[in-house]
Image (tube, rainbow, N blue to C red; front, side, top):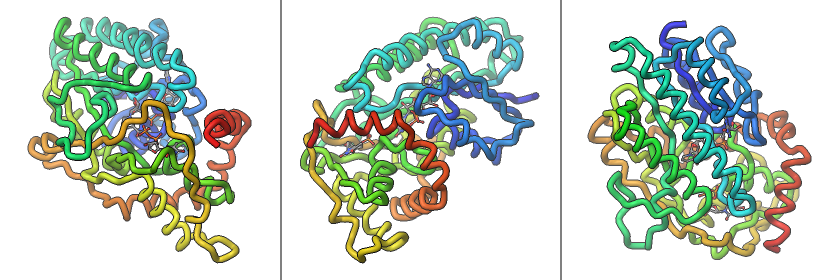
Length: 356
Ligand code: NAD
Ligand code: TYD
């Protein structure tokens, strides 16, 4: 199919939202290479038109597989969402993060470079490799520090952010050394449909509805800059279309929130949308638990480059995006129940037992 893109990690949270949005808004096909780890869920793509979307189970580090897919489908761009993405898991077991985020990304870059070199001149000029990264590579801000800009030095603090920083550096070097036409985006915390309930917002929603404690780490005053996933996906589409190769783009919600405020807002919305049978507030389930080791205090993104170059701004407010998100979880009990399998329960036991 003409104008095909190859997406990696497209069965995960952001990748699947991106593919669904792409199929709505753009022309052409999507080849989706996903290892289908615990975080990858083909159900997320149930509404993707099978005539335009092909899911292939595989590792981005599998050079033979990726090279075959590139040769067969001739994509105009590769978008790399695939990663191990959860900080707490990276603390419990960093090896998978180094394996996928560093080594497999390196192998992916090499497969893509070989493909790109063989393209006809016009196609080679138009080709793009877009690498999806995080604001966590910049480390932690003090309360008065300016938000992260594209020129903020990298200072990653967790195994997750260090592995993502390494991948960003590889992508940068493949541009600088080999001329690969790359784009990198560094985005703040996302929330929205299909997010795996190990991350703050879906974990709080599901725990609240199950009558379980809402575990807030430390004093609950850590700050994150929350962005609705659909806004992130729209920003990525824009960078892919108009971004300048070799550049990085910071994407954020202009929406700094303390964790405790986020949890209180989730509780207030649930009190309205799905009240507890005893008439009391979900707030009563909030429990402060032992902090995450090395917990970054504050992240904030300066997204002025996205705004000045592309006029991009988030469309959702936190209130509207959070309401949509809660409504999505409340109206998809099958998706939620399928997630809560033995592996998920084992993770929850492992991560939270030691905090109590
Ligand atoms: P996710 O964990 O929900 O999904 C990751 C996907 O990658 C899963 O489908 C998984 O099966 C797949 N995957 C993992 N290892 C793979 C491998 N070796 N080969 C192929 N597929 C593999 O993550 P997410 O939240 O959707 O994040 C997507 C990307 O966006 C990541 O690179 C992450 O670092 C970045 N990011 C996430 C956030 C956020 O708030 N979630 C914010 C900024 C940036
Ligand atoms: P998370 O969703 O894991 O994203 P990240 O660590 O990548 O920012 O966590 C968001 C914030 O919420 C972070 O400061 C840690 C905190 N948090 C809790 O307080 N309790 C929890 O159970 C989880 C998962 C996170």
